[in-house]
Length: 273
Length: 173
Image (tube, rainbow over all chains, first blue to last red; front, top):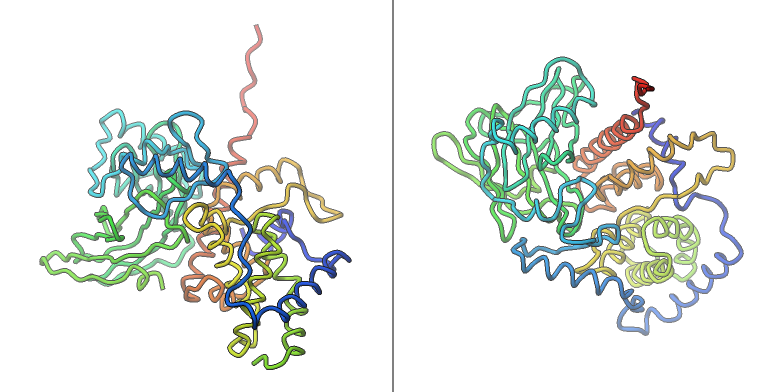
């Protein structure tokens, strides 16, 4: 989708389109200016926000309960569209809070002969087939963390990252397409090609994917209270973990271990830019 | 540097409509006036250090104010970007099913993707300005914008595929 098309399509969704201020808005504008200039230099602190709506208190109770179940103690948030209707909450990714709670920091190779593995592989192959490219598909970096599988699907110069619990739903995104300039990485380095978060609260997760040089044997991310061992295979590394960062930014430290056993660490942010 | 009330008033009147729209796109309607007020209060107190192009500073300050208003609970959803339920353009030629696909795709986007797309399209910021709002480098912002565009395109394709009619008609007995 080119930028002109993007702008034309999204202009239809603007919840606050431009236009002259109404009489009421002009009145409020002028009243606010008067208040700011009159009070700013006398008050020790800004005017406090209004009290939280009651629904937030109820959602925080849900979060606290979920924490007791063993989820990572990060800054959890719950969106109003994800309120529980029973035991498990399901995010727009289709991966449930129960499935995410089974997460392990160290992944296991995905056994595509197992029931879970074959279902997960089938879902990802089918889902990513709707994306660009043609021809046969291959999988790499296929792993399992608890009940949730992740993998990279390659087809005709395109690469997609996919996550699913093999229950007929999941999440995928295009990493690179055949028209992209081929990326390179030095033998002892890694890059981050894509990172992001999906969902929120106990249906949220962060994921990261990039290229790894030929001298790289292992990659791990230390994010405060947890260590995530990435899956490194054929020049790519992938990792994901539950509980998306409140700001959508991935932080912490990343450690690279080389094939000669040496290691070095750096802030994740230094790789994102 | 803003050194007089007159200068600040000029800045305020020039930026108020855009800041109002920025906050309206993200905050609960009941919080909009508070967030805008807090932002300009902060701007007045820091008037000596405001940049010449104050919009990114104002948007970034409002963004933090919205996140802090939901501290520890809805922090991420606080900066999620709302969408219009009906097309705001008076002579819009939009196809209803096309619009539904777009709405569904937007709602499926990660909040961070919504943020960068909104800054790019609705706030119409360049990469220098948008990266200042988010507090990241220009390179990081460019990467995030590219990824957000791809993700939105993928979701729209997925939505189109899900509502594609069956090619084989049902058998009649």
